[in-house]
Image (cartoon, rainbow, N blue to C red; front, top):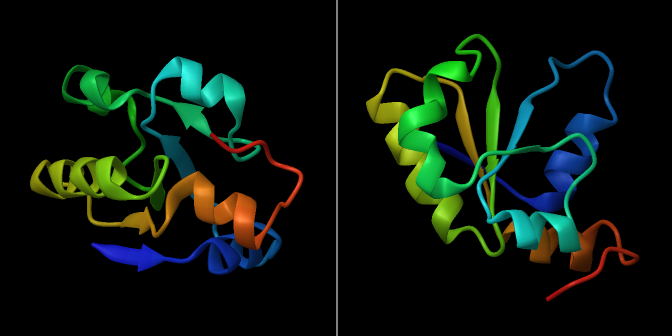
Length: 107
């Protein structure tokens, strides 16, 4: 598994020459409703074991949560299930709010 910081992800998302990743937000719906990175797909952590076959194995997948712990667990799960391009967002949406988008609500 790779790790990526919020500024690195922001740079990747702004680069049209790079393959754009699937932003997989593994928080709960109420957390997602408070704040999320634009374009993120919600799949709560507890739903991943049943729903991971829906994910495109060809795309890089950036796993996102509040601070990076749950997303790391999901990233490990995806790797164990054959996904090879999995990235954990270090610091989660909290880091995104602090380092990339100061207008993003925090909780």
